Length: 544
Image (tube, rainbow, N blue to C red):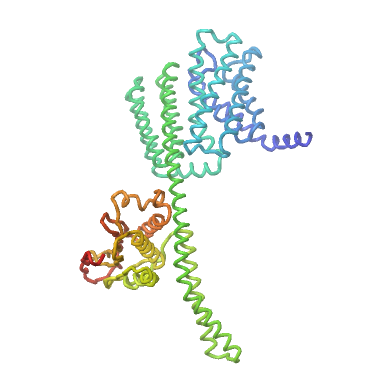
């Protein structure tokens, strides 16, 4: 017990400068936001200081209770009036401090650690707890004022509405910004957002809409308030939660300044603050949805890359077979030469062969590592015919054993700048799909046909057809979606990877709706290739 107390005391001393800074900042925020007090009491339509206290409790736990209580009491005494009696100021202040401390503890326990409120589930949970918690704090505070005789019975409902609005708006708008500023990950993302040139656009739009709503509209700001939704939706849609947080804070400050300049009444300010909170919440939800979609996209890309690496591993096994076989042969030759006492050119030539084949094997493995890490292709100049033959070769024996007629039409004499390994994965994925389609179809005879032609002067079209059942319009639309139920196992995942690989090479891959299987790939030909366009092959029913 004594050891725990000593540890707590040491932690308190270690964070003493931070807690003193918090107390000073809380006092300043409370003083700046103290305006339009209802009945001359500390009931204002905008109160951002509690957001700072809640964040402190979430970050430091019960250790933050003491500095929070001191800050609230100093604000109650120094900002809201002079110390007349202990009952008038200290007891309501302690009620507020206790309420904020308990709400901070609830948020810390129920929300994920280091939460940035950038997903809808966490955002909804936070809003519900803040709404209910601030309501309970408002009730407790007003009860303490009523018990002190400072609040008349007729002022109960206006007081509750104004205090709840003030705390609710202050916490809802400012707390996300403060949470992000106290998180290393959040600070980095806010910094990128602020330094983004596009941020200047929605800041200028925010200034323009504030001027239209309150400058042109004057005291009719209610009529044009909807214009303020434009900059926050823009910021949230483009920059996610970070943009929404920055824009919401700037617009809130602009609204407060405008209302003070125009000298709105306390009732009008409270009503406008409700609109401001609705504006901020809408922006936060748009930002949360954008962040969720971005995380889903990143996860999907990572999954596709992992799956693509797995498919490429099959191609690598084929690629590594030749250099490893050669390595074994050359190493055996070196061993024999050494046993015979050979130290001349023959041994050196065999060693050079070992080094050459080792370099080939290392290059193949490195290309898999590069793809796994970045997904970027390693292009080289390849003839179309050689590329197709390398992909088809492993399937010739399979076709013969399965009784499938595999035909490859003469390829146009063109060169491509592609990653050989990745494009072989694409062609083999299409061939595997064709073999599965033919095997599942009752049609006889079973055939697979591969042909290509030069389409204009800048691209080549490669077609893989089979005598399977073909594609329906619905299946053609969804088959490249890796999350589609029918696609997420087997063919579809490989097709999604194949389309992504073709896209990185500047081409496109699609399936056509027909009574038999048709897949097409368009790829750009090597710049400077002057071969004339080839004739598009004509396919007869006997071919497929």
